[in-house]
Length: 332
Image (cartoon, rainbow, N blue to C red):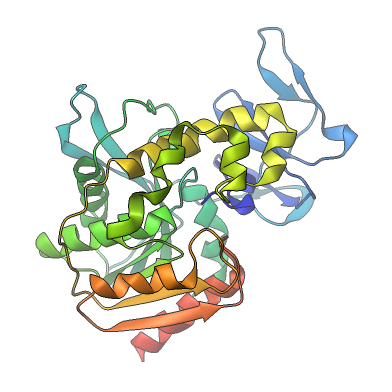
């Protein structure tokens, strides 16, 4: 559920550095930001005078190319937040935030991207440079990451509050249409958001459900919420490189466990969705096999397309390109 790419792009401030991908990326928390360092000895961490983890010189993870030159970064400057009208049993409101890559006009199409477990909106920021101008990428940040990194991870909010918070954020934006994309756990989130948008009188034009189990089987991985990191790796939910760096595991494992716990709180009901949808599956995906993805047909009552790619579970440029091509076909 947490692809290696998610580790390279966990959180980015308003200015960033282009970075060449190292063979084993290394995330470091500096103040309240997550940064990535390469695996070479020159990127070793140290403790500062107050015990914080700091590197000698570390670029921030944005893209796949190293460069010493800072670049302007628009992602996150146009965030829209939504807070559910309800609170959790512990009295903590559920929040979500859209990380919009550039201004949205009434003729633009908003692509809302729901992340896999353990990841956030920054995972989708590189997409902004690879989509048509009319398509605005908006990743979703959940508590504990990105702009909401100071929000408590526990207690876990309920699905109703989370979905309504996302819908509140989307509803605040005036655009030509809203397209939803959800990957892995994000597929279930996208399905629930699409239902809520339809009930609110603002239906999405299309939903892309990628590498995720259908609602009736969505909680199968939730029992791993208390698993040891090695068990998470064995289950295909965490990249093995994480275990080679204690500090990296300290950052990522709690986020992944939090989301798996949230997944375990999902209560399946006989819900259906009439919005046109496309299912996306990887032939080599061991986390969510192709047969599992096909199970979405049970709850989708509108037109449904199916894309089978020679990929694993992680997000890829091939998947993004296929989705964008299908979106553009709908514009013709």
